Amino acid sequence: RAGGLCRSRRCSSTMIAVLIAHSATVISPGSKVLVVGSGPVCLCAAKLAAVRGFSTTCLVPPGDCELGPGLVSEGGDLGSLPLTFMPVAGPEASEEAIEAAAASAEGLILAIDNEGAFGKPVLETFLQPSSALQRVAVMSRYLNGEGMGFFASAAKTAANKDVWAANAQAVASYKAMEAEVARMSGAAGVEWTVIRAGTLKGGGSGCSGEEGDERSGEPSLLTPAFYELGQQDIVNWRLLYDCSALKVKLVRGDTLPGPGFTAALTATDKVGAGDSHRGAVAAALVEALRSPDAANRDYSVAAEEGREFPGEKEWSHLFEAAH
Image (cartoon, rainbow, N blue to C red):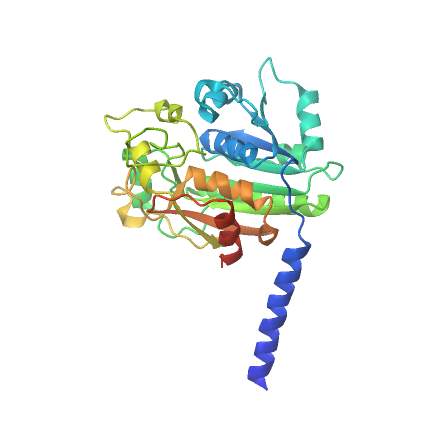
């Protein structure tokens, strides 16, 4: 009887999960999506949302508005891509335009490339009960503390400032943001998804547009102009990473470790524990808007060695299979 009862309970849990997934609201191509944040991961998410057919507005600082078109399309010509850049501050910013974009968006993506989290006042602007919003996907970080500490902090200082070392202040800010997103989403009748990243690496298209280059890459990501940003090395390790770290691991919850004692060895071009490819994080944020399985759940994204980036069907399967 006990065995039968356990099996019955497991069956009931499975049925409940299936019913929740099927009742979840999903965002379809043509819907309005607002992408808010800063940096390459935000710009990449905006590009992928537009590529997937969403009518996309990217609300970013003036500097990102200037860089955005060239990072999204070579030469900066967006053509028929349904993507508009809007400044969040500066002389060109319009409070009325921002409010209108927030009120009409059916999907919302929140992503900041550095270690900044969205505070309550900003979240209140975009998570309003009176808006058209149905789904929100927000980028957070690995917060469980495993594989962090001295080695990760040392690698961040000495090798790569983007290494995620989970300092206490940043962790507290992300936890507060996640709690506010869940609370405000519930009050607004909106379904949320948290996408967790570790150390953000890569994000460009690699060598995918260069004939005869066997290193390849993923053409849907940011243009080669991405490799001109920031500090330049003799060998552009970000380009090498974008050719070899395209496989994605997606798991439920906050369970993945940081780089641990190998942090210094894997801080740049080598794929290591705690890595998250920017393109994968951006794609996960976009795909979460239209995945029934992703509603009101959190996922962690990890990079793995591989030369094939997931397509639309593969992303759907990743969310379905994540556990």
